[in-house]
Amino acid sequence: MTEVLLKELSNSDINWMITTGLQREIAAGTVIIQEGKATDTLHLVLDGALVVTVSQADNNPLGRAFAAIEGDEIKEREIARLSSGEIVGEIPFINVRPTAATVRAAEKSLVISIPQQELAVKLQMDVGFACRFYRAIAILLSNRITQLGRNKLVQREALRDMLFVLGQLHDSDIDWLIATGTSQKIAANTVLIGEGGPVDALYILLDGTMTVSVSEDERNPLTRAFAALEGEETRSREIAKLSKGEIVGETAFIDTRLPFATVRATGNSLVLLIPRQQLAAKLQQDIGFASRFYQVIATLLANRLQKMFSRLGYGRRIYSKGQPLDENVEYEDQLDSHVLDGMALAGTKFDWMLSRLRNSSD
Image 1 (spheres, rainbow, N blue to C red):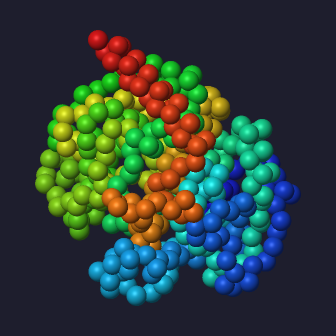
Image 2: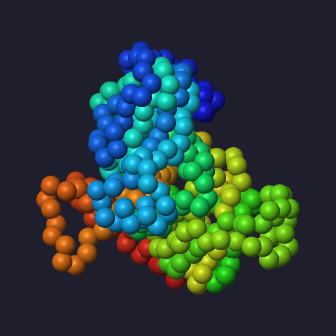
């Protein structure tokens, strides 16, 4: 992944990270990020390898049940290996949840560790750096999600994700999206994005439901793409459901690879369509907008990755009727008051956006 940083970051960005960070050698087996705990440092891997694991939570009855069903008795499961050029510890800068995985050195490794406080100041003061940094993080997260496999995707909390998005964007950004985009009705069973096909727009699902599915056809991707264009039926498997508030097609703006999944409307739906060319031009010309946009994408990908980690580690804790809430326990969906206040404001923005779109279409 070294090429991602070299491509996305400038020489001055890399020099800042080197001069600000502490270069240190990590012995094999050393834990640098602990599952369930906040981290105050960003680590850039210069040499060696790190391993990412999730615990099986054997003290959790639900976790033990899932482990028994899957015949998995181990206490930890390795889910990824990270090599030189990777960044770890980035999620706390773009996410509100504690990390859902443990990261330790698989072998003797060399890292640069940058304090969160100094990075936060740099991101706030240098919008160009912020734009390049968030884009690089989004690309790395997208790669990790792809590597974890198609069958590990989970249901997203669409409206909550949208509220996080609107909380990051300025009112002027939302104005531009509304002015540039068009509201479009999508008939049931219509393919919005086809596996292996081009992505021509960014879509925000305003109403209705959609599914994400992957092909189980063994033919090569090009053959499958032409088959889809010709309307030929292929075997597919549903991996996620999308609902109001979901953003679709966003990774096309950070990843040159063609989509590996098909997005199809399951019922009559309404989307806000922002043309790819116009959005790409906006990202090029407005660095402030670009910084916020890439931060939003990185946040969405981080949330999805965290949920995948939780699922792999059986880290699901669900409150049910009759179960007492413990004030000392942090539940999976628990958010602090500052985040809730931000989401309340974002909810108002979402309603305002829908109202403007309805008025413009009348």
